[in-house]
Image (cartoon, rainbow, N blue to C red; front, side, top):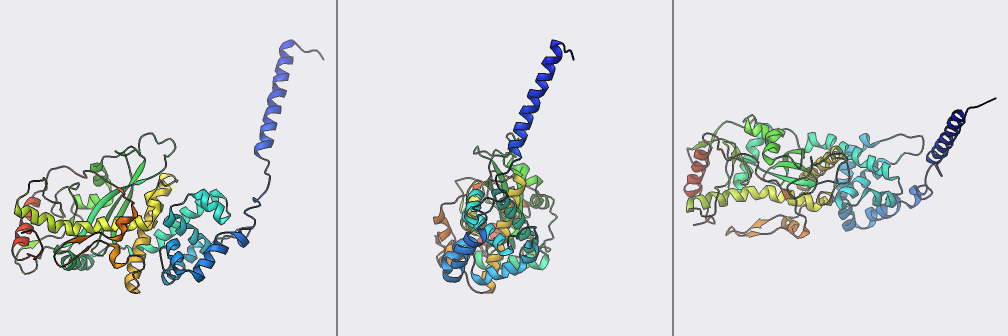
Length: 417
């Protein structure tokens, strides 16, 4: 058979391409083993089966450091989520308790997924999948119980506690926002880069008088303007449209002055009828100093809440090495675990998660003492201005009404004189 030179060249090229393809294909599809030898001994030598079970039975202090809870809370949590954590597999499935422990270790210690893979003797992709799935379970199962949507009687209860503990009547919550650092997402451009130059998502939270979250919103881009974050998130929308189901206007204690229920926030927030911010500026008169002092007592509750959250769940103080959608689930899991442990601490009178001196405290003279969480050196980056300087109609008048009340019927002995 006769071939032209061009035909021979074409045939040789095809042979070369086939050889290269088969050589590459055989390499990428040939597995040295189905399961790495180090992972085959997971049930005998993995962290969960050896170290953790020993700690669980013999060392309550290390058990708390690993899980951020005592044994009663741990068993309760496992009973609530175990049905959703049950998995089936051709091979022996990873136990539901092991899944929960792995995720709690990741959230509480802030270690990398690769480190957990080596410790628990699992594949890194398996560890990542377990963390995201378990965080979703935590949120889905716990949020209806420990962060439900509040009704008018709930708001009244919170208002009463703010008045008794923090001398801020008709206040139903303290609000603030923080940037949560994440690893650079692929193909994201500058979408997640915040004003400090690193990648982040935004967590906006409202808390009650006892350092428990009433509502959270997470997922806004770090590069988004802070005013845009507030305007587009669910909490901000409800505040700006005044669509929260607050109770009707009510008299201030020992007074005939009626005012609406409201949140308190720092100077980053806009002044609204349902959101009180402090008087701006440095050179304030006595009236303004008194209001700012009383408002700051209530506003520091959310500062402490975020401080406790970040100190207990160390992953929030480091770059989360997951895609933003998964990072959202991780942050939500931390907030709902915080609520679960704060509330069960009270129910069981244990105060394990948040002891008395772990939060900021005040003496009878109004002097503030820093809480233990401030020694953890984990400071989340705050959001900046969350709205325009334009005040809503009647908001300044309402702030003046509260100021006059603090100087008269609602005066306390330790406020500025």
